[in-house]
Image (cartoon, rainbow, N blue to C red; front, top):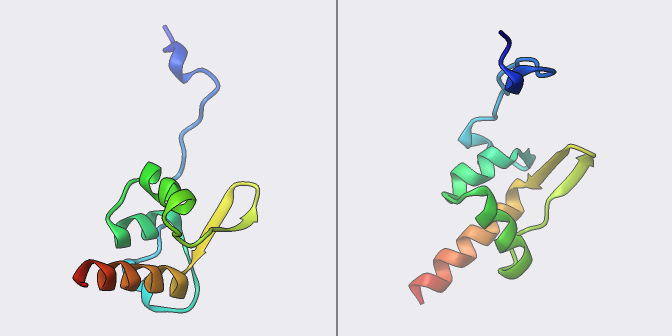
Length: 85
């Protein structure tokens, strides 16, 4: 018997994620890279975008968003500076 949860679903290919060193460039970062660099969860990322001035994402297509690496680095540096003050 077929598992009802698997009807209509097909296996997904694993996504290639840019290495964490991508943060050092001037390009755009995948969500997974931003999460790993900042050490936060999805929910925290979007909450910080709404309330704590985290850089807005760039929508490249209906299902693709990225973050500008220099903006993310600057935001993290500001948080570290404020925490040290």
